[in-house]
Image 1 (cartoon, rainbow, N blue to C red):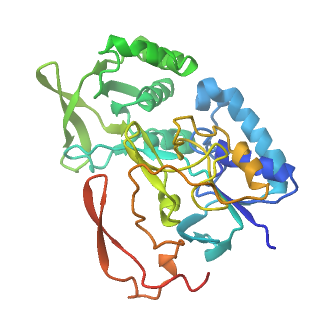
Image 2: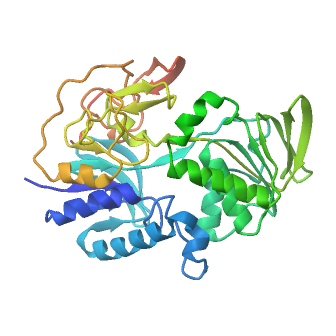
Image 3: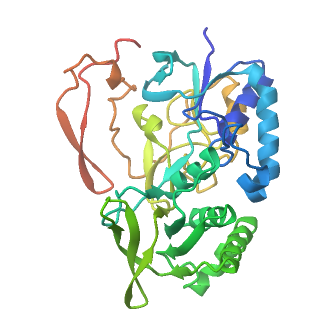
Length: 386
């Protein structure tokens, strides 16, 4: 029997899973869209762009060094595929494209550790050149050692807002303002819950204090009105409403983000069971304590990707899923259904839409997803390559 474990994602969770499999004598394939391993948290620039670990990672500098050293030791034991994009998936197969062209990657066991992405709430003019997501602004700083502007405004909500603003201020950018659309300290009853985050909460307070020390205004309860553009269509500022007055912050770079949401596209293509998480306000795939999904031999790991039905946290490290993937697997037991969502990508069994012949995508079918009516195409027949 062919045993080809495949891991999607080369961040901390994906590499931890790879290490667990390698320790058990397996050689996993690790697919990642980035040029280098590390995920978003340990992203780093090319060698010619010199930045110290402290400049790049701050409190996480020690962890970044440990990750880099660990990956260097692990690399000969895995089949690492950087700059590889997955454009479709079905049971037993991933359809990928890389610098060498398109290909089909078979898998006997699959661990999805694809990480998270920015959640963006659009505002008028948000597509103007010079407007980035918070994650995009962080990528520019970490991977390219560049700033998105000389005078930058950070707007939105969530812990990433203050982290990226702090990183830009530390890198020498002029941070015009941090415009928080939420009101994190407006409800005193919630402070004990916030403080329960301990280290994360302390870091947040540190970032806020450091920004204030740099003279950066931190405004909460802001309502964004419009992104302003110049004659060249580039962003020149952002209009907002705060404490009963309309104001304008002049800038040449704007980063917007409203928290993070899990990357669930591959799970969706595979037709995994999802349920709606009212806290995250997102459809998330089911998983048990070992990271097993609703499909046999498919595991979930990493930031926010899986949702345990009993409310317990997801396995924080991919090594837990990697250890499970190295054992003989059985199909998970029956799960309690919560707001079961129809699969958007394929009929039952994970039929692969990418393998259909052109023009054989079937008729558009309507279904509701979180109260919205959308359209999706279902193929008429199962993937001929299965």
